[in-house]
Image 1: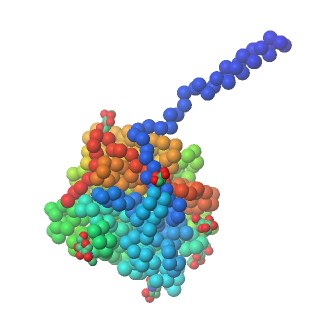
Image 2: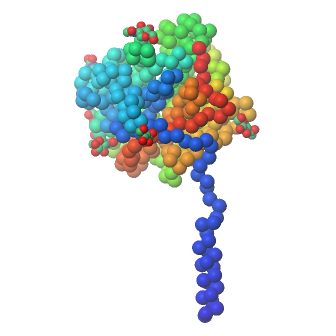
Image 3: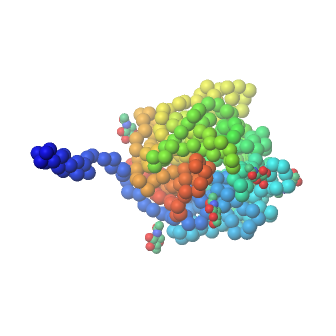
Length: 417
Ligand SMILES: *[C@@H]1O[C@H](CO)[C@@H](O)[C@H](O)[C@H]1NC(C)=O
Ligand SMILES: *[C@@H]1O[C@H](CO)[C@@H](O)[C@H](O)[C@H]1NC(C)=O
Ligand SMILES: *[C@@H]1O[C@H](CO)[C@@H](O)[C@H](O)[C@H]1NC(C)=O
Ligand SMILES: *[C@@H]1O[C@H](CO)[C@@H](O)[C@H](O)[C@H]1NC(C)=O
Ligand SMILES: *[C@@H]1O[C@H](CO)[C@@H](O)[C@H](O)[C@H]1NC(C)=O
Ligand SMILES: *[C@@H]1O[C@H](CO)[C@@H](O)[C@H](O)[C@H]1NC(C)=O
């Protein structure tokens, strides 16, 4: 009996040393710097200018409290004015459509049709000429959490000069390009005169719609013409029965109030252009695959251009679960690896991904932005804790964060101009 007790004491002692077991290091890569804390509206995008000005956007398509219900004071785009505060940009007026972002005189309710006001901005990006472009989905959530379809005038890109904080161009997308249930998600630019007849550059946009047809939208910034490619192709859609795991939690989607849970339906979302402008990369949120297509196939509008575009898609292997993407001047493609609290990078030259940075403070990496200062900026916004995911309660804890990390080997912003 006594002898038995001694043995169990010995094994207990051995067990108390269990903390010496090897464990997940949790941290990798360059040091993370905290740049900004968001205490007010819920952010997605980040754009950093060559002079260090920073801009974010706050979509009302994922957070009912971001919806402008005619209440002056909401903003869907802001400039970061201190490390904890933000101010409506480019003006209070453009962020406050008369009567609000939603038109309740239609049934069902629809996004307001104003071309001169911002309705629901999902992305802000600074182009190679240091101009800010605002990507408006034209959609917003009603107070009960229903995402309304857009009306013509809502879905658009708006160019703002950072010299005088004035809108210099607005291009609205016709309903044949931005369907009422499209969700314009993110945008990248190639301003080289050679890529279009107009000579004023081109932009590529992902349609991440949870309800409808996914695809890539292309817009000639000179003529304002826009068109789609890869419409409903498998490579732009979420995979069947897709479940992501963040901070140990499996994620199921809640499409709307009172609706049954579904698998993650979000399609082509992250987008990035190769350093030489020859390839466009993207991925769906509901997929772990990375894809690319030669940009020439997207610019082509000939009779068989859609067939050729679908045939030219390259599947580049699994990179993890991502939202936004970025590229740098060394040709590397940065992708969120949300399930690993990490950002990975894909090197097209050797076809592999590796971990760039990892930290337990990283949660949902929404948007990345490489600046001319040689840093990768990214927002973490706890998207997986919003009421859009099971169990449908808002579990986010403010503040949301903006981080940055130094790029490897002198990498910097891709400047196709
Ligand atoms: C913001 O600035 C204040 C004052 O310079 C500083 O004490 C604080 O640490 C900064 N916070 C962040 C998130 O950078
Ligand atoms: C919206 O704001 C109200 C009031 O601050 C708060 O009670 C509610 O939880 C918020 N809802 C979301 C989805 O953030
Ligand atoms: C609201 O919808 C009505 C009916 O289609 C339309 O006449 C009006 O212009 C719309 N207003 C806005 C702000 O979208
Ligand atoms: C949510 O609100 C919209 C717009 O007011 C309304 O048409 C719809 O019936 C509501 N849905 C639910 C499930 O309450
Ligand atoms: C603002 O600056 C841009 C150049 O960045 C110029 O094209 C435009 O005319 C200016 N607008 C106003 C209102 O001054
Ligand atoms: C691929 O390239 C990256 C970036 O240059 C490098 O760090 C990595 O070791 C390479 N991977 C392989 C398997 O060669």
